[in-house]
Length: 154
Image 1 (cartoon, rainbow, N blue to C red):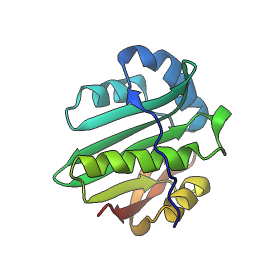
Image 2 (image 1 turned 60 degrees about the vertical axis):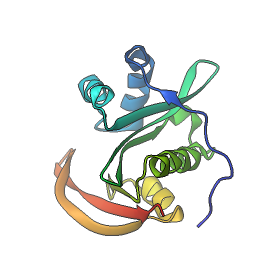
Image 3 (image 1 turned 120 degrees about the vertical axis):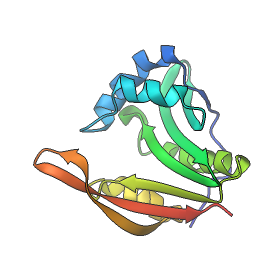
Image 4 (image 1 turned 45 degrees about the horizontal axis):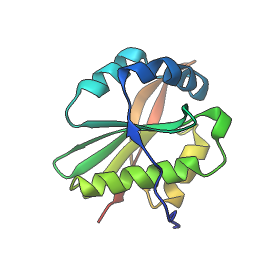
């Protein structure tokens, strides 16, 4: 398991960022989050919605929730224009560091079994598969399961 040596510079997502963020979300996922989901996350006290940008261009973003010493990774997205450059790994590392600062001892996430690149990223960063949620995600043919993964942050 390798760790990047530097965190990404992140800032909180603002309502005004959604205009630039939503086209990235739509291009990145077959079933993207809606603006309403992002708005709900922005207003929830235990959610942390953060983005990485360079020259006013959003390159990556993530949403985590932290409560009762658990961090849940809800969204980790790298713009398709900037994938395969290590941004996902650095964003995950940075969000884990934030979780630790907020007293999280474990991190949990769900991922589509069809998202092989994400699963490989999580495995490479020390996550383990701990379960399966049946019919969790919408899919073109019915529903797709979710692989549940976890990692100790201690």
